[in-house]
Length: 248
View 1 (tube, rainbow, N blue to C red):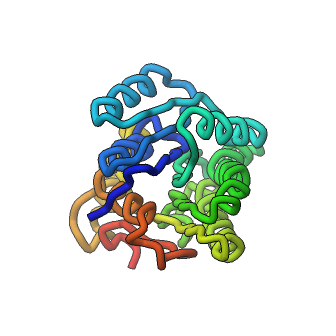
View 2 (cartoon, rainbow, N blue to C red; view 1 turned 60 degrees about the vertical axis):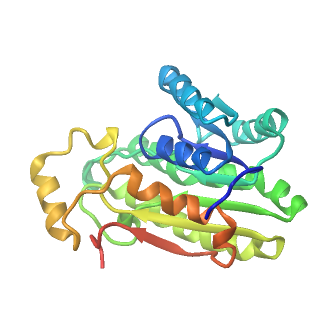
């Protein structure tokens, strides 16, 4: 049984979709939770209320994941208000569905800065604390599209591929401090950002999947929770696909 009582978790991009489900499930296993959000204060406040009904403390912090200095401020605020940080989940990310030959510099920079640099910002900010306390968990949310080429998603795929290198290097550097760093690579997941995905694309995804169903946040979050627990103390530097066999 996973028990996260006494742990404090920070989830970036945690106010909706997969990030919000990760917050719920970490709190459901006993962790106090903090999360960042960009704009939707209403959703953030609603999630704080949900977590508090579980008799867990919860803190929502407005922050742009791409802001290096803000990441350090968030780490400091969470430590001051919740008493520490033991778990970091880097879930903040955006996508731009633009073909390579049409992509602007802004299309590229926006995605890389949030999805890749954002993870670096928070891992960099929390690393000294983890080293000092000789304990910490980091899970980054990648994608199977960071492991293969995929049409129309150049910046997204590059960012997710970059996370693989970031995670493996962080695992190698921080392992001697009893810090585990891993990456989850989901396949297609039904989240608010996928609401307008055409049925044709959904059908193509289903054809790729060995298990003929589209994923939900509830399918991904339990794996994240496992990696954030001491049940996964011997797991680090790994890329774990959770994709119904979409990419075998």
